[in-house]
Figure 1: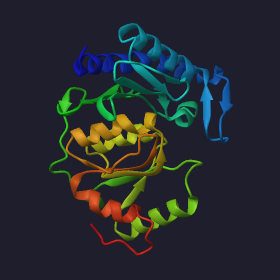
Figure 2 (figure 1 turned 135 degrees about the vertical axis):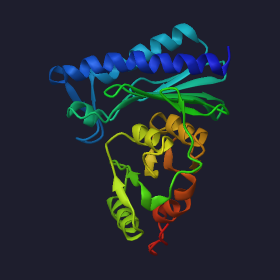
Figure 3 (figure 1 turned 180 degrees about the vertical axis):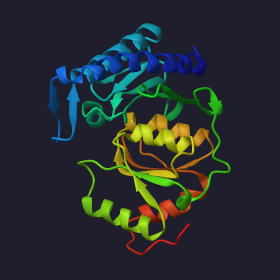
Figure 4 (figure 1 turned 90 degrees about the horizontal axis):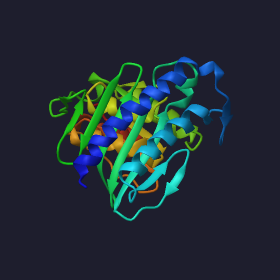
Length: 262
C-alpha cells in the first residue's frame, strides 16, 4: 500500500478521533485527571480513549506499520512505515474548556515524514499534507511564498517543564526588541499548523516530542515554509514563513546579542 492510502486514512482518522475527543470535551468535568512529570503535564481518560481508537484503526488497516503514541508508547512494525500520534495535543487547554487543542497524526517512512493530518475539532478545521504534494487547509492549498516577515504577524513560542525559563524569557525579550509580538495557545501542533496557513509568522520551542512536531513540520515545509532540522527522538523546533525564518533563527539562538529587526 502507498503513502496516498496512509495519508487518506490519517485524514479520516483525525476527524473520527476528533469527534470522539469533542464528546469528552463537552463533558470534561466528568474526567479524572492525572499528572505526569509536572502538575501542568496532565492526561485524562479522553487522551487514552482517543489514542486507543486511532491505534485500533491503524492496526486493522496496516498491521505491519509501527506505532508511536504519546500515551501508548511504541509498537514495532516491519513495513518501513510508522505512525506518530498525539491524540489530544493541548490537554491543558482541553481540560480548561479552551478551544486550543487538536488531534495530530503523522506518517513516516524510514526517517522521513511523508504524511500529516492535524484536526482542530472545535472549529472543525483539518490541515493535511503529503510529501511532495503540498499542504491544504480544509482542501484549500496553502502557500507561504508571499507571506510577510516577522513583524507583520505574531510569532508563536512553546515551552514546557523541559525548557529553561531564562532562555524563554530571553527569546521573548529579543523578539520584542526586534518589533515582533509573541503568541502561545498551549498546543504546539496547532500552532505549527497555523504557521503553515500563514496566520503566524513562525514557531519556536526548545524541545518537542516527535508526536507533537512531525506533522506540523511537514505542513510548514509543504506550504513552502522553512524548518530547522529536527532530531529523530525529539528536540528543538523552529519553523517559519521564508521571510521570517532568518530573523526568528537569530532570536531563538543562545547568543545574547540583540537581533536585527526583520
